[in-house]
Amino acid sequence: MGMPYNAQLQGKLRHTRQVLSPFGKGQQITWLEPFSSPQTAFRNKAKMIVSGSKKDIRLGLAPTSKHPRGVDLEDCPLYPESIRAAFAPLRDYLTRLGVRPYQIEADKGEVKNVQITSNPEGELMIRLVLRSKAALNRVKNTWAELREVLPHLEVFSVNIQPEHAALLAGQEEILLSDERFLKMPGVGAELRLAPNAFFQTNTAAALTMYQQAATWAGTIQPQTAWDLYCGVGGFAFAVGSATEAKVTGVEMAGAAIEGAKASASESGGEAHSAKDVPENGQTLVESTPHFITADATKWIKNQKHLETPDLVVVNPPRRGLGSELAKWMEKSGIPHVIYSSCYQPTLVSDLQRMRSYRLKDARLIDMFPHTRHVETVVLMSKVKGK
Image 1 (cartoon, rainbow, N blue to C red):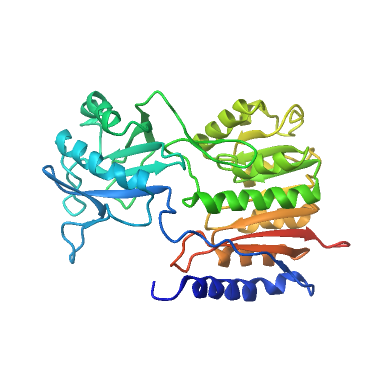
Image 2: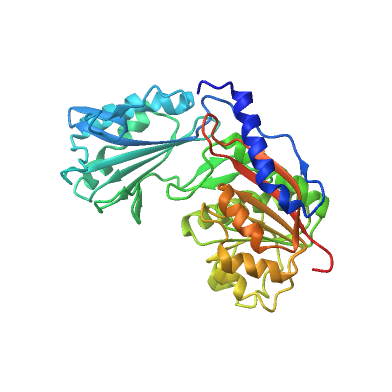
């Protein structure tokens, strides 16, 4: 963190431009102003390992040989005040709960970690990850105590992660609050986030990416658009807000799709599950956006009878699109692609497989200042005759 922030940002931009310049296909890429993140209080989520003992709970990094009691992160400046203010009440609650923190080396204890998410209004979602259900009834009977000291606590859940492995959460999610979703800001619709659904850690950066996609889509004005790896629907709603397109969002994480459907319902749209939509996709005609629970690569294989969309938005995980989906897009004839990437090496690999596309516009999103990590969002167009 010794390097001035602007110098960091310019270094990231130089590297990104160098890496992506070959994909302009001999023409100049339009580089938009990079998004510079706030340097503090920008993280909307804290994932805290619970360590120490029943009577001396610590929230932060896991214990190591150098720090056998763990590293306390309660004063970390990366979190907003709404999250930092929740640490002490949460630590006190866990102490009163009287359940032993999980010890990795001994594979003993129950409380593994706690995850706190905040929206810009300061409303909170707390997820308590336990090794088993041994303490579940105790949590059920006492978690309301947290609401007394954290009045903005909207969503509370328990996750069961029984494996002796470096996993933050398991498959079983148990919702204890009446409210299922934490409301997060979006472009075109208010988004709804479940405890086990993904959302970008930097809210301001996420909104910038959504707005950029809306701006590009508004220029293109597609009649149909697909949002692959749509998550809770951020890009789908953004595209829909700037166009009259029929937008279909595809995501394999059921919890994310549930949130997207709830947002669509609140905004007057309709949402469909995979079982509602025949393999040929013929029923997607009534309203936008539509959301489907499906693996993106498998889903596109079943769209042989559906007209090729005018625009596809992809926001894949770190591994990228992969060979199969990238090659399908290369052969598809889709005229425009918006690609939001969290890992440049896989973005480059995918672009190398999509040789008939020219990178037209690009923007660097500095999601995590003071790290080497960058997000990149690009607009590509099919080269005529290819």
